[in-house]
Image 1 (cartoon, rainbow, N blue to C red):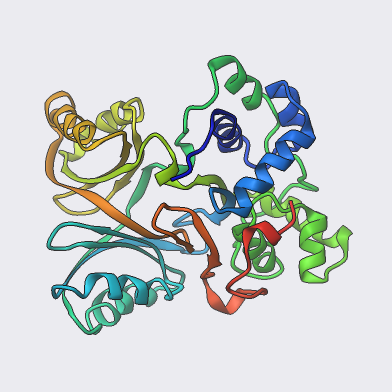
Image 2 (cartoon, one colour; image 1 turned 30 degrees about the vertical axis):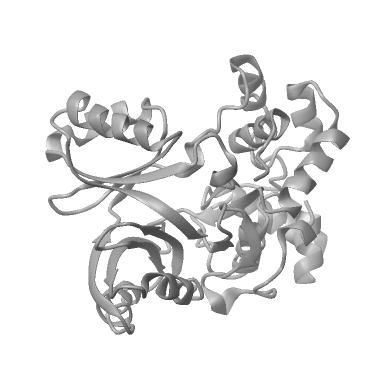
Length: 355
C-alpha cells in the first residue's frame, strides 16, 4: 500500500495550519517553489490522499446542531447499513467498530425538528436496526481542524502560522451570517467541495459576477461562519488506528481535563455530551498497543476522568460528507448537506475542482 512521503506530510501539515494560503506564501515559508507545491497538492487531491474543505461551524446563529448516534444491528447487517446511511445527506460521518453498537455516526440538522425525527424515527425504522443510543453534541471542546499531522519542524510551522489567514477576504461582515442562506449558500457548498476555492473559481461555478462573488466571499470568510480543514487519508499516515473513548467527568472538572487533553499526543477531537457519559475523545494512534497505553494514561493521569468504554474503529465510510475508500482516501463523491442548496453534481471529483 502506498504511503505519504515526508514532503507530502509537510505540505499537509502546512495546509492544516493555513488551509487557504496561496502557494506563493506557502513556498516562501517552506523554502520551495509555488509550482512544486501546487503540483504536489494536485497529485494528492487527484488520488484522494488529502483535500481541503470548509464547513459551517456547529450550533451557530443558524441553529445548526450535531448529534452522535451509536447503532446496534443484527449480525451481518452492519456493512450494508453503513453503505445505506452513507447516501443520507444528514449523516455526515460514519465509522464502524467491533462492538454491540458498532456503527457510530454523526448527524447534522438545521431545523428544530430535524434531529428528533432522525434519531427517534428514521434510524430506528431501518431494517435490521436493534437499537439507537443518541447523544446531542453540547460542545466541541477540541475540533479536528486543530489536529496536526506533524510533518513540519517548529521553525517551518511558525513561518506558516505567520501567513495572514483567509487572504482573499473582500470585506468585513457587518452582521452574523447564516452560511446556509443565500447569497451565501452557494458559496458555502463550493467551499465544502474545495476549501481552497477562490472568488474566481466560485464565480465560474455559480455564474455570478466576479466582483459580487468576491464581496460575498469576503463577507462569509470574515464572519467566521465557516471553519477550514485539510483532511488526510488516515490509513496512509503513521497513525492508522482510530479509537473512540467515552468518558465520565464531574462537571466541575471538565475544563481542566480538556486542557490536559489538548496537550495529549494523538487526541484529534473532544466532544462534550449532555448526560453522565459527557466526553467523547477521538484519537489517532500508531498501534493497538499505543491505543491501550493511551487508555491507561486517560484513566490514571487525568483523574477524576473515568473511561466508560473504548472502541477501535475498523472502518471509516464517510467523513464530513465525503465518501471514503478502505484506506480512508476520498473517493471523489460528496453527499452535500443540505441537499436542497447543492449547485453541482453529487459525484464531482476533487481533482476537477479549481484552486
